[in-house]
Length: 600
Image (cartoon, rainbow, N blue to C red; front, side, top):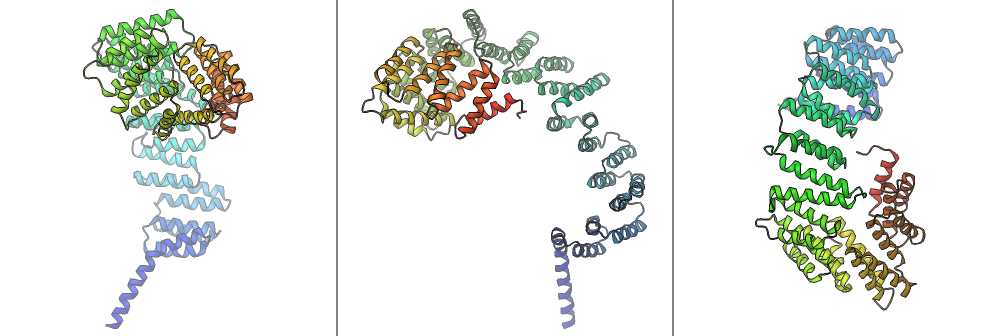
């Protein structure tokens, strides 16, 4: 009985030790104690001869330790036992390679290829063994033979593409990825992601040539055309992309969805001409029966608007033509909650560009009375209408509308926006203490933009109220800001000159310059705006407007004065010397784009 218990405990103990042996062997290997690791892996393999991992680790320990004789002996023993095991020839060849016997190693590698069976697992195993020792050509040969053995030439195209990538053979890598798409079209999106990751700009020409050939050989395989469209999108060649998607739309008898998606991509990238062409194609060829008709017509109008007003070179005639296009749209689809967003855009056009505040107010006054309005659309219409009343100096109407939105969306970003506008209104009116209290609360807004603006306002009020016993300079400046908001520029300039004349030593000099720059920008007088901002950069860079002035000056040089080197210089100064600025991240991004970096 006692002997039986001892034997049982011995079995339990040996089982416990055995269970720990792989971990112990691994630890020895990591610590560089290869002989100890080899002993354990050999024992593990003898107990479990079907476990290739133990054998491979045993050989690895011997070769790393330089014990090639025992490694070769072990492999030969295994080959005698299982001569059809193709992977063993790879292992043997590697041992010979490590002993500087390339010709002998080559024979073993070739033997491994000969021994590959038609089992997919065996094919992958041999190819992976070659991959581990960086024998890419033999790994490729293994997959190519495997494809023939299983009578499926594209079965391993995905694996071959990765091997060619590692070799740096871009042309063959692309070819294999295209084979993958041919064999398994459901992998199209995965292949797009891989091509985007691995291809350099110059490589897209190789891809296009191969795609043109595939499209010619397989005209009914639409996914090659889809991939060519994707290439044009990577190159931002929207006109050629549109030609491809139009061809696909016709071939597949689609309703314009693919074209609409392309148009949106072009629009978001500010390629307005291509976006307009795509949206208009849907309107003209699909007609009112298309489910995309209304959306395409609306987005085409928006693209036309953005092309015009963001180009900063529009004429009064062009604005009137755009106004007529909006009128035509709302007349076709009616004036209701369905077209409320377009009516809001029309009101914005009237107020900010055509200086027709009364018409803008009439449009929005009607919009907020439409039944069944989406509550968010209604709130945005009220905020916009409040701004227009403020532009007319009808303060009570403006604060009433802001307060309605604040009450309706207390904890929502819309509520925060309404509260910020109400606080600004109090600031304009000279109620600085109440405005300051609101700005302090809004510094905790979940909207980064509102929080930053509120913080800037709060600091500005604190700095300028603390400089003097009187609030007159700040009140005059607030008046000037309101006049700018109301597009009463001559009065704003006069008010600012009064500040400089009456309070020449007050700390508002940089703020006056900054506000003047905003007027010049609205007037599209970019050289004057740049001059005002440059004075801030030269003489007031440490003031609160310093980083704002740097960023705005950089954008003027980039977009309007077309001095890219100067813009780069300013962006670089901003993200290096003012790394804590809210503009630092965008400045770095703009700098990299101008430098020619690829931005994902």
